[in-house]
Length: 125
Image 1 (cartoon, rainbow, N blue to C red):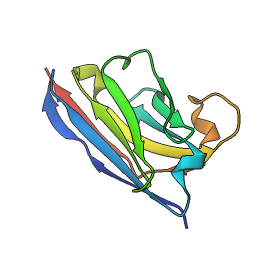
Image 2 (image 1 turned 90 degrees about the vertical axis):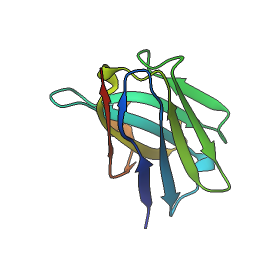
Image 3 (image 1 turned 60 degrees about the vertical axis):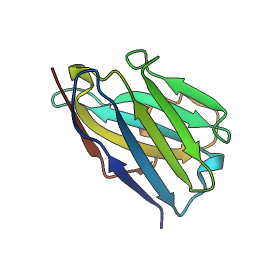
Image 4 (image 1 turned 180 degrees about the vertical axis):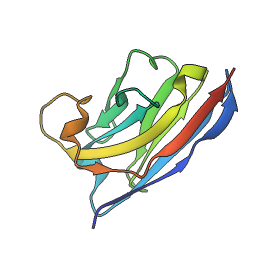
């Protein structure tokens, strides 16, 4: 059984930092596309960051480039999202996701077949 268990998140003031974790069991993340998505109320799910190939290749959405960093620890089978310089517009429910390692767009949510339970991030101004 595949499980993605998220932790971290919470409330922070603008300019602050948070780190999200996603502990994976049942699959090996080193041979998967892993990603973080977010969804704010009334908005579509947005791709935040992606990672694959043993953590060598990373991708970022335009709105978080330079502020967020995705990483993975293959020994712990866990991915992370370090979020710095947070803005109120970063407020959303954040989800980690996994899919097979095949060539396709990293940001297409429908291609991911395993999802975490979601964790709320709230940034106040």
